[in-house]
Image (cartoon, rainbow, N blue to C red; front, top):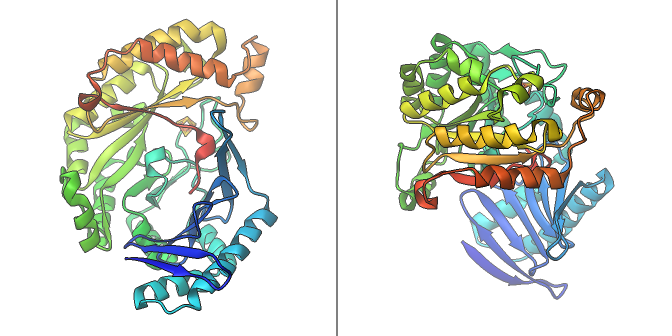
Length: 408
Ligand code: SF4
C-alpha cells in the first residue's frame, strides 16, 4: 500500500506499507523504516544511513564521494534526537486522514516505548555478538549461548561468557519469549538464525528435537522455491521463514555425518556458515583456531554432500608478512577445493584487532606488523586472483564481511 500526503509544515511524505515494514519518506533526505510493531529499524538522515539495533544503539554509515565507507555509533543524545524527530514526523502523519492499515502502523510507531523494549530485549537475549551479513535481519534464536572453544587469539566475541546448551523446554520458552518480544514486528524477520557461535555442536539426538520445536513454531518455506514465488509465499504465511541458518566450526562438524546434516536439512536447515579464516595450517595453529583447514574442507564437503549451502568466512590482513604468502596461496587452494556453487557465499572479512583479544599483544611480541585496511585489501585481491571458480551465475557469491557493520 502506498500513499502520498502533503503535510501542514509544507513537506510531503510518501508512505509505503508492506507485510514487513512501514517506510515513511519525507523527500530523498529523510526516510524512516519501522517494523510492524512500530520499532524503528533504519533511517536515512543528514546524508547517513542509520541502522538501529534492538539494544537502542544506532550505527551510522556514510561515504564522502568515492572515499571509503565511514562508520560510527551515534552518541546516546543523537540516538535520542532521532527518536524525538521520528515521533514529531510521525505525529504530523497521524493527524491526517489515513486508510486503517496505515493509521494502525503509524500509531504503532507513536506508541512504541523504546525504554521498555530495550529492557525486554536484554531480558530475552544474552548478547547477540555476531551474525553473517545476510542474516542481520534474521530472527535469532539462541539454542546455545557463547562459544564452546573461546581459544582463537583474534576473537573476543564471547570471551568471559560460559558456553551452555539450552534444554528443549528452556528453548521452547525462549521461542515464546522472543515471539512476545517482537510482537507484530516479527514479520520483519524472515529467516531463523540458530545462535550462538556453534549451535550445531549440540549432539544430534538433542538437536533434532530443537529443530522439531522450530518446525511446529514457524512455517518453513519449502526448499528450492523459485525466487519469483517466495514473496507471495511469505505474504500468505505471516509466521513463515525462508529457512534455518547457523554457524558451525570444523571440530563440531566432524561429529556430524552427511546423514546427520541431511536430517537437519529436511527439518529446515538451509545454509551453514563456517569461519575458515585461512587455508594455511601454520597460520590457523598460530591463531589457536580449534580446527585445521583440512577438517574445515572436510566439513564443507559433507555439508554440500547433504545438499546444504555454505558460507565460508575468510579473514584478510591477519598474520602479517610472516604468513602472507602461505595464507593467500593456501586459502585460494582450499576455496577451490570446496567446489562452491550457486547458493554458497565466500565472505572476505578484513581483520581489525580487538583490544579485548590477545592477538595484538602476541603479534607485537613476535614482530608481526599490526593489521591495516590496505594490507587486508591487498590480501583479498591476492586470494581472489588464485581462485578458479565457475562463472558468476554457476559459482558462489563473493561479498565483504565487515564486523563493524553488524547491528542486531
Ligand atoms: S572465532 Fe569462532 S570458534 Fe574462535 S573463539 Fe571466536 S566464536 Fe569461538
